[in-house]
Image 1 (cartoon, rainbow, N blue to C red):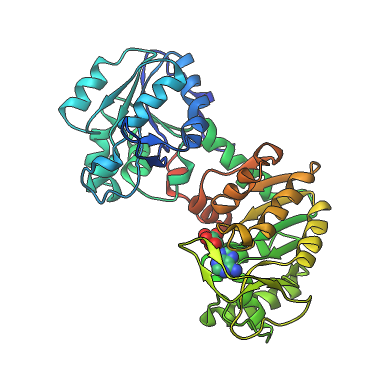
Image 2: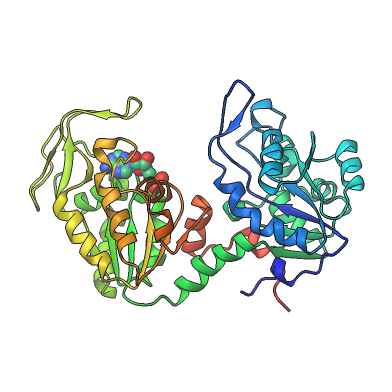
Length: 405
Ligand code: AMP
């Protein structure tokens, strides 16, 4: 791990500023907003506990939602403070603004072993402007900075970049370090065969990561909406399936590059097709499977990979030594179109010899929903951040952390 981590710090008796990712989903309840999934809070508990054990006090900062630079009740972190207190079994103080007199008083009153959660940093426009003056106020008297919010590390904001640069020590939290170890370390020199499963809506969104992975992977399995643009590039008919005509040339170039590099790039052989898809209503008209190799007829739309493809892909997955998966194989939010995605989750979970890394977003939801969360090696918490990291882009929130001496 080239970056300083919380394990390297000696923060006894000092105040530590921790950028966490408490961007959790909230739902209304009679007692006020309720956290419907606290995974992001749970994931950062080891870092918080370690820092408390080391005798420091903690000032926590996070964003929640997209409040557009001004306070909005529905994006308040107040319910998170109460929930965190229950999880850690200790009181968590809350400052109703992340900067200003109340926050300063609350910081000054903090004793070792205590925690203060600041209100949503995005209630101030200066957060997203990466403003140094605002960062100074956010940090307050803390001069040790810890970033455990990998999911926000691709954003150059005050709490993710400017604060890190201002602090005298800037280290990765345990969760951040784990993300960097798996997405960076494990995949920089993967055990082979290295297999990538790539799905999701659009080629355009995954082009960077696809290009980067073409240089490393032995096999790439393509699924989801993005597969039809590839099919079109091969001169096949795709009916009314999702496709990006302006990306057809790019898809052709990728197929050619895979051939030159000796990367086996597999596309779905058969497809679940429907005539009507009502995404908002989560339903489709009765579907049928194309035969392997058959085109998609006019007026029909591909919504999932078919049984033959599932079988072929599962066999490939069973012999891989490293597996990276990003993006669903179909419109998995609709139960009738989720079988292919769940089949991939099952196949990845069944290969216990492989290092399996689930790269954020919908594939994480699918693996968890299928009940295989415990059976994979690592689940990334950062959707956009993990894609950018895998593309080889520098994440500002990581670059700003100090290197190990
Ligand atoms: P992404 O965020 O790029 O990983 O894409 C995820 C989205 O892709 C999900 O909301 C899926 O419903 C959607 N998706 C996957 N397969 C298809 C498909 N065949 N047609 C339309 N949308 C799809």
